[in-house]
Length: 112
Image (cartoon, rainbow, N blue to C red; front, side, top):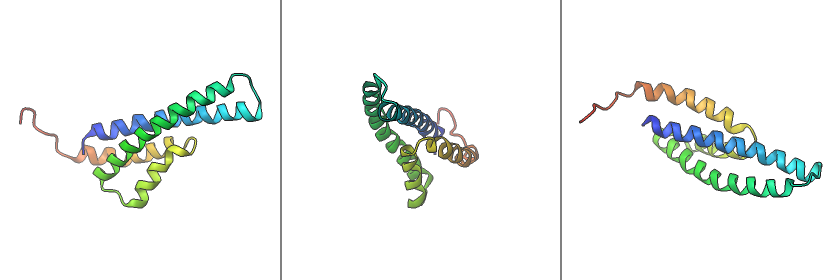
């Protein structure tokens, strides 16, 4: 497995996590605090999170299939983008686990 597969998963995990926290704060501002402008903010962030979550799913599934994860672990990682802050914890755990595996693999010889 290439390090780039892990890197793009990590980037999307952080993007998805940040947008989900922003969306959660927007929903709180819209419904609990009834702030002006929260409606537009929630709409924009919700759409962005929705589309980028799909990209996160693709990258996480690609990572899981290349890492040969069991189905339960794959589902756990895929659902991490739906719980605020979970993506950060899952990403950290997965990165620690796979960094060692990526480092163990022999590097391809340049020009070969």
